Amino acid sequence: MAWREYIDGASLLLPTTDRNPKEVFKKLREALYNNLYNEWVGMMNNHFGKGLMTGYNLAGPCPAAVPAKFCNDYIRGMVLGYCYQLEKKTGERKLAALEAGRLTRQYNLDKVIMSEFFTEFRSERFLHYFNIGYAGG
Image (tube, rainbow, N blue to C red; front, side, top):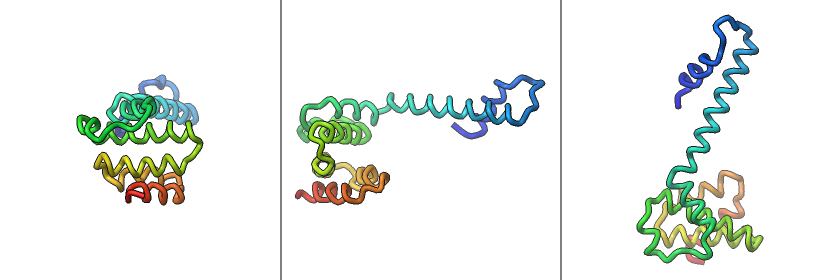
């Protein structure tokens, strides 16, 4: 959604006689927050969100033939959801990163896109384990 639409949406909330800049800013901030929240909730309706929930509920990784039926966004979510629950179950982030790398290679996912999940949070150590898993180690 464009910024202009946020501003237009917020202006509908303002009474026509209200000219207080603080009140206008407050209404704009509320409208922006509500729109961003609604977009975030909508993300769970996409393929990545569905795959994330599926992966979180898996007991083990799928055979390579099963994910071939789904789009890459769904598979990415599934891998990350599975590795997240694996980390929660074992308490080992290194193991989860290794498994994420291994599954990324097994399911033919883009290594760069998957590794971004480890670089965004400044976790170079876990990126190292992801790369080892991807290399087959």
